[in-house]
Amino acid sequence: MSGLVVCALVLAAASVFGVWHRKNGGRLKVRGRDAGKRLSPADLGAELGRRATLVQFSSAFCQPCRATRRTLTDVAGMIDGVTHVEIDAEERLTLVRELGILKTPTVLVLDSTGHIVTRAAGQPRKADVINALGRAV
Image (cartoon, rainbow, N blue to C red; front, side, top):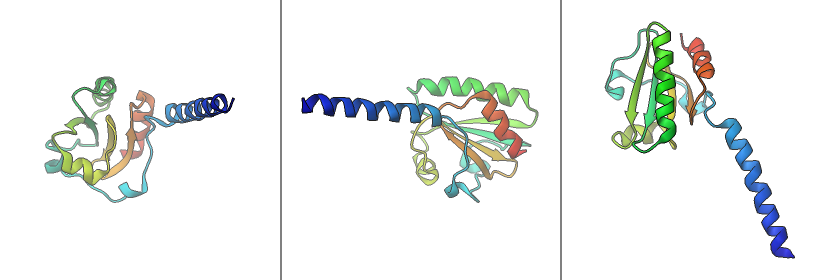
């Protein structure tokens, strides 16, 4: 009987975690440790956008990274002066560690000077990216 109780508790805990993770994954938010951080064109390996830059950290076998790439490319194409830069996390481990990137895809929204405005770990929704760009521009 105790094995059944333990199994039920584990399933309940996993369900609560799954609901929480699904709700919070991909949400763009400001983190305290990002305050004041600035990325230069040398850090990115590309020029900053005139109004804002969407930076995506990806890995080769990441399925959500492909969908995120499409979303960010669409948004960058819709809004004048916004650039999308994709960085392979495996090739830029120093930058990944410096920024505390723990998961791919991770998206950073930078203002025109390269300061981090917000970030999302996971696949963000198009509406959330557009909203975050409103804060960056």
